[in-house]
Amino acid sequence: MKRLILASLVLTLITSCASRSYLDTGRKKDYDPTWVYKVYKIDSIGSWNLIYVKHEAYRYKILSHKEIDAEGMKIGKHEKYNLKLHSMIYGAMFAYGVKCFNFDNTADVICLERNKGIFDLLYAENLKGLYLVEKLP
Image 1 (cartoon, one colour):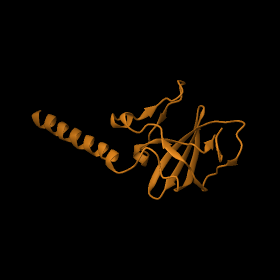
Image 2 (image 1 turned 45 degrees about the vertical axis):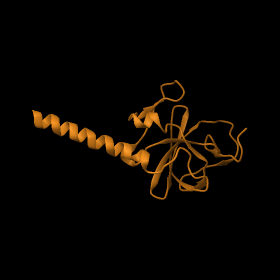
Image 3 (image 1 turned 30 degrees about the vertical axis):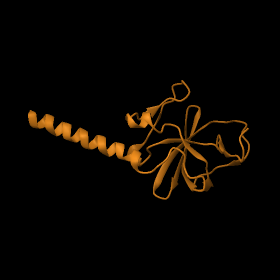
């Protein structure tokens, strides 16, 4: 029994250190505005569009409210865009291991996908719905 408890403590410590090491990798709250991201999946849940993008070896999940009357260039799968990304959850929520979030007090729950390499939820200041816009009002 003591071995089981000791093994559990060691495993917990290793897992804790591994998950917190993400915070020390140099990723920042705001992402480089010169980066170009390739859209590889577009999905939705409730009132949110979920846009999955890649930059080099990293994957990101972007949230954007669904918009009916949005104007601009509609983004598409397999296309590349310069997106102005910002973290929605960076910091304390990430450090405490929260995996799912509710942003607008509805039943819409949006989760990280750590098993797929998605460790943050982002928003793009130059997206309105699924449309790329130059300036937001």
